[in-house]
Image (cartoon, rainbow, N blue to C red):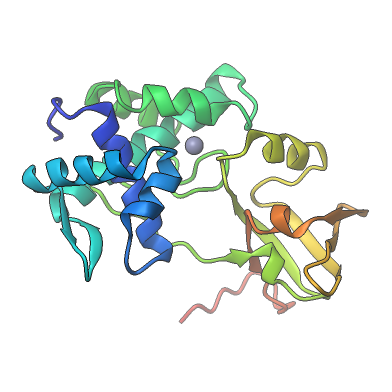
Length: 233
Ligand SMILES: [Zn+2]
């Protein structure tokens, strides 16, 4: 159960810190400022306030870290966000490039009951329309495997796991070429010196700039022709 008294800004900070911590060991206030598009001075003030509320810990050496209480709230808001995105897409016909902005606002205001109803309505989904895992009700983030398409090698056959939801224009373009989660891609060639990645989707080839290839997370498809036998021992 989450306290209903937190401000929207604090919830956005918690989400940002959670996200940055996935890739950076030490989350700096300047990284938070950049992620949220606010001045560093306001971040410093807010982090101080959040430390007093025991949502974060901050030391020059460790950077900013979420406390277990802060982490719990971050996951709750992320759960709202991803369920809402899927609901908007599945139930209301929103395209995948439009759901993020709506979910950014709604995630702060829906009740636990509303969250449960959406979850039930959608059949207890595990991923949002961009392929991002939905944290469980008890605050577990499902494990995620994948690497950026820009890291794939020529000849790789990969499946799209997740696309970043933050750039609607990129999503519109990728939707146009049919690149969505669970779609298979063949990497034909990777041009040197950060040149484009040449891929094939359903017999059609496309060139993706590295900037675009970086926001697409993929996983290798097993080479085995053994059929159904899954041996993940
Ligand atoms: Zn989103």
